[in-house]
Length: 125
Image (cartoon, rainbow, N blue to C red):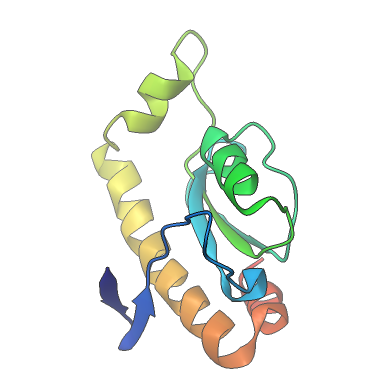
């Protein structure tokens, strides 16, 4: 599947056992309850932490050594199931924050592709 982001075309990758992908050319973008709503964190590698989706990706590619961009969605309120929280809709105020955040994400991806991950980390972390 292809999608246009900031006038650059990117290919979404679906792992299979026969593919040999250069993990340094892979960028995983995902939500993170451990980050404040709207905050970005770019890393060159790392563990999955508590994120089940990242655990699955690490299992599939058999490595933690690939870049990732985490998008903060804020912590789960006490008494709310984490899965329900992650799948719930943003409030109007949260939507406003996330609209700006998604613009930052697009710009960060553009920077990673054109200028490298170190430059993007210096700008967006």
